[in-house]
Amino acid sequence: MPELAEVAFACSVWAKGVGEKTDEVLVHPTSRVYRDLNRAKFIKALSEVVLEDARCHGKQMLFGFSNSRWLGLHLGMTGSLSVKSTDYQPAKFDALVLRQSMRCLVFSDPRQFGRLRLHLENDLPRWWTQLPLSMLDPKFDLQILVDALRKHAKRPIKALLLDQRYFQGMGNWMADEVLWRARIHPAHPCGLLKSRKRSKLFEKILFVAYEAMRTIGRHGKDPPSGWLFHVRWQDGGLCPETGKPLRRETIGGRTSCWSPTLQRKPRL
Image 1 (cartoon, rainbow, N blue to C red):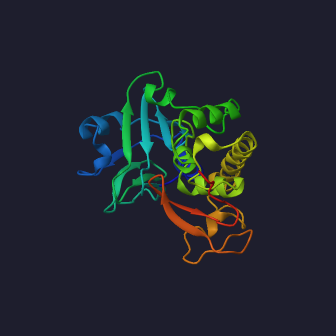
Image 2: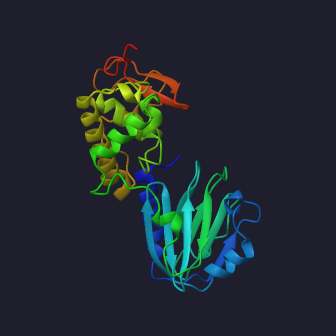
């Protein structure tokens, strides 16, 4: 599933259409991304309006159009955004195509776990304004992490990092990267993290979030060499720091990767 930086880059792709009017709206007749919407109303709302704004928050995107039209977009597991030529015709998995005079904005989603929302008011939709604080917000501080650890003391730390109530945009690879850099086993119970480890964890959350945005989010490129990101899915993958084998196992409901040498499971 696309995470913080991938979503930011996807949003920037559609941002190329800001300032242009939608000449035609093409919707997939059966895609589940419209499960909360009336297709006819959706087409009417986004026809002949100008894309004025593109923004993202965690894994969510919001596109503002003239005449108080707001389009919310979540990529789900397999969603992607692209820009095509003006004569582009929808392909099999294209859920939405917005045809403009200079380009087509395309949302594709083969597995249809993504979601579209439509808001027709002057103000920003509540489901957007009530999203939790971003990890990139200056107000995001250590106390947020400490409170979450205390509230979910028995949960494995990997599961907590994936909780969007606290860490907007954090996904599987980012959580593994953070824990590897913090030298914390993904199954470590939240309530057993000592103060020094909590501070280290917070430091690495910010590092991974900002560095991912600097590389993936800005340019669509992979993180620098030496990141766990590059080897975490390789069979027989080796820890970038120790050169010793990595391990993969389901923890907190998700496949997790860690370095047994650096990330030791605590004795309970």
